Length: 238
Image 1 (tube, one colour):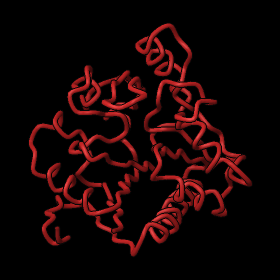
Image 2 (cartoon, rainbow, N blue to C red):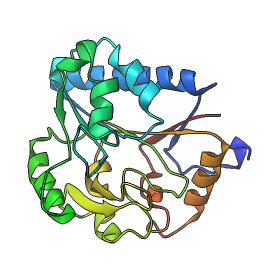
Image 3 (cartoon, helix red, strand yellow):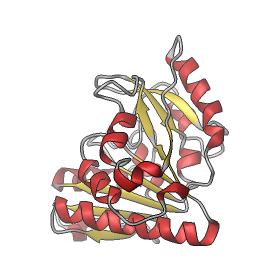
Image 4 (cartoon, rainbow, N blue to C red):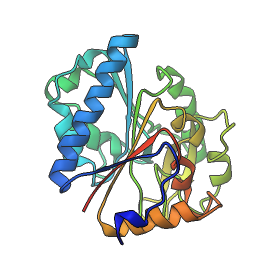
């Protein structure tokens, strides 16, 4: 599909990188620049990133950016309901690939909470996330082939509440189609309040998904649709 086939809403930015390595380093530079601006203007900065496999190179590139990391708070857009020591933990991923070297001085606020059930874990995380220095200064999202972002999955129980722009919840339970199924996600209301919103995607398949998401009217069928509006900036590479 040609890039020109995409009809982006007004105010949505488009950035094309030559390859995955260029995207990782370029996006890291963009994020670091926005964090420096936040630090200069407000003294602190809140960065929220996504997990999974795709962000690893970006997180590693960001970790070596020169920042006063001691004044940066880092959190997650979503999490698998597993302890940080589990290989599927997004918190573990961030600690291994971002919070190292000078970046280890950043404050990290995760989503995982031990509890008897996923619902109770989400409620505990919701209370704990009151420590976040809101609003989010920089948000970096990804997108799945099914149109999910964060852990806002199509047809998941509770998705309507999670996508409610007026919701007062910070964190909600969510069910993924793949293992591990039990997830925790920040709400659309919290994510969409971010000052800077970036979406990082790779490959032609993601372009096809993006075009489909732009065409749908119901956000529940492709939840990323809720974020395809200003001030989002999309960063794509082949």
